[in-house]
Structures are given as structure tokens and as C-alpha cells.
View 1 (cartoon, helix red, strand yellow):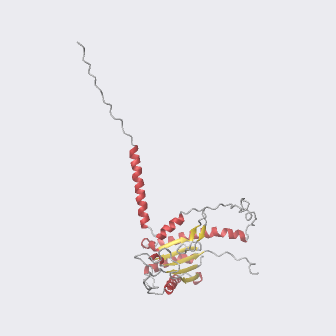
View 2 (cartoon, rainbow, N blue to C red):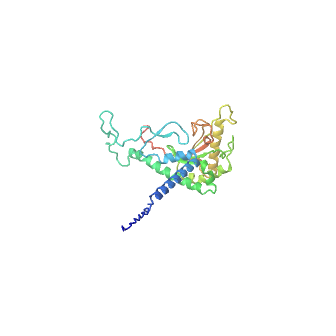
View 3 (cartoon, rainbow, N blue to C red):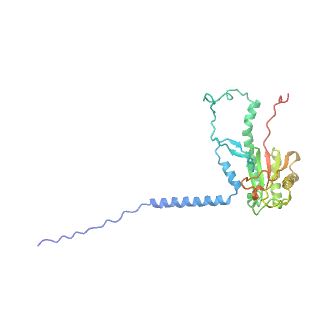
Length: 286
């Protein structure tokens, strides 16, 4: 009798799955969190803060040029010509133009001082911005008022702008009388402004009247009166009269947002800490 052979086939167990998918999923969740956090931050920041961030992260190798657009940045824009080489080529020969750099400048000469002045102004402006922000951060309600205060370096020096926002203004509507919160901000800034060597230029601006609506107050008088009110509060808080260079009202001629001159942030008073003027050569008028 032939033996019966029974074959038993054992099914191999599936191998252990790797954890690579878990890492990929964690990376995906992290990226989505970062994306939604970025979108939330963008929605919470004002246009002035976005402009300040753009200026902060702008490539240092690009040269600023005046566009004439005005506004809080006073026309500062990046030159469309792009990166500029530190050794420009001569138009005819194509060689690096080194005529000016070949001249020897003696230490302590007027040319040497003029060359170092922009760097000195930039360093002084950065220090002034830090001091002004530190003075404001001591205010109990600074977090609430931070959207109305814009501090930024400009071509002329450092701007401290008191800016209206929808739902929160720094001056009473159609009036030169500031709110109490505006007075507190100026009084908090006064000790720092008094200590800094910069002369001050105060400029008032307002938004344009919408087509078909009549302005309740003459805009030139309104902006000049608000600028004068700011000067009086600073002077009353101890800033010497000699520190003021000019007090000007610009009406609606220089909107911060030229594409929409009717919105609230165009209503502002800018206090500019002016850069030191270059020294006049002693033999200039001889």
C-alpha cells in the first residue's frame, strides 16, 4: 500500500512595516501648522508692519533709490537695476572703473569724513529706534497702541508715526485735539527725544475726502494744527524748543497708501529724527 503524503504549506507572516510613513506624516502636519501660522500672522499685521518687515529682509546688496511715491517710507524703494557690483565697468573699455578709488584719501580729510557719515548715521538711527521702542514698551497699554505707532529708519533719519487705524484714531475726528492715549505716547517718547542729538521735524498728514463728500475741516489747517499740537505736547514734556527744525502740515498731498488715499492709515503725524547734516567745507563761500 502506497503511503499518503500530506503537504502542509506554512504561510509566512508579513514583515514588520517600517516607520517611514510616520515621519513623513509628522513632517506634513508640521508644515501645515507652519503654513496656517504664517497665514494667521499675515492677517493680523498691518500694512505698515508688512512694509517694515519687507524692508528688514530686503537684500543689503540692493541700492535704495528715491521713487517719489512718498508716504511713510518717503519714497524709499529698491532700485530696479538689481544688484550693483562693487567695481563698476567702464562703458567704453569694459574694464573696472577705478579712477576715484585710485585717489589716496588722507586720514581725517573731508572726503574721508563724508564717506563714513552714512555708516555713522545708520548706526545712530538703529540705536535711536531701539531706545524709542524701549521707552514705549514701558507703557502699560503699549500692546493695545502698538498698531498706531510705527517706528522705522528712513533716508532722512528715523520716523515715529502716530497712525490712525479703523476703529482707533490718535486725534478726535476733524479736530486738532489729541486723545489722552496720544498724549501719553508723546510724553513717554519725550525723555528719549530730549536725550538724542537729532533735530525734529513734525509733519501732519490726512486722508483724502472721498469723491462726492465734502471735507468738514480744511485739510491744510487740520494737518498743520495737529503737527503743532504734537510739538506743544513734546515741548511741555521737556523737549527744548531748539530741538525742533520744522512743523508742517501736508494735508492729503502725501498719502502713505497712494493706491487708496481714502483709508484711515493715511491720517498720521510723523516725527522725524533728522540725520546730522554734512559738514560745510570752510572755503566753500570764499
